[in-house]
Length: 112
Length: 114
Image 1 (cartoon, each protein chain N blue to C red):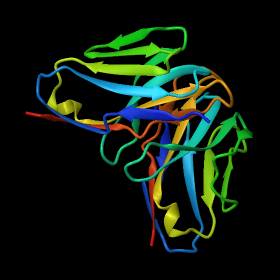
Image 2: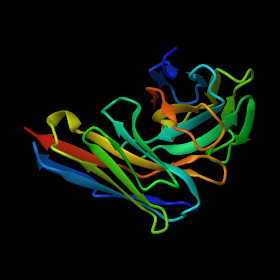
Image 3: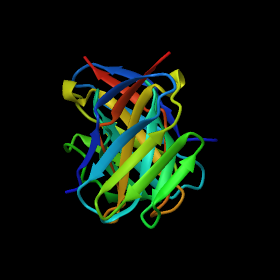
């Protein structure tokens, strides 16, 4: 059974700092990995999608990497801002059954 | 519409009451998923449709939960005889093709059973 773990569970940083969120998964039979942002009381906003054949994706200040063989992904946020405060979720799309399996998330707080 | 739409946004149900949650996926999207998110947790898979076919319902927690997508577009998640442990946010997502594509989520329905 696929298990997705996110570390740390919570993170508080001062504005302007660069930071890294970690995601690991136990079964490498995945189609892709997706990073989401969730604001309190809201749904999920897709940030980056990395296909299993790719190593990384970039969007603005965000960069996500994928090492499928070792079952790891990182989300790098450059020059963090208070508006980045949210819960960040990673999810893998299973080859078997096509469903997304989520981690529990990292709660990020960026202090001004 | 431009995105996945869910209704109602909030639902309070008395224990034992039946509820129906609606999902309007992005037009033309083939795949539709339902997830349950408890407070402080990541979303947990409930069920998956490809067009009108329910291909996976392995995540439905009990036979009180039922989902349908009769015409391959709008989907309804029904919970019968609600219990307090059913209190959660129910999220719907759609994808344009059956496999290996990005998933787009709705805002969710927050269900509170009192």
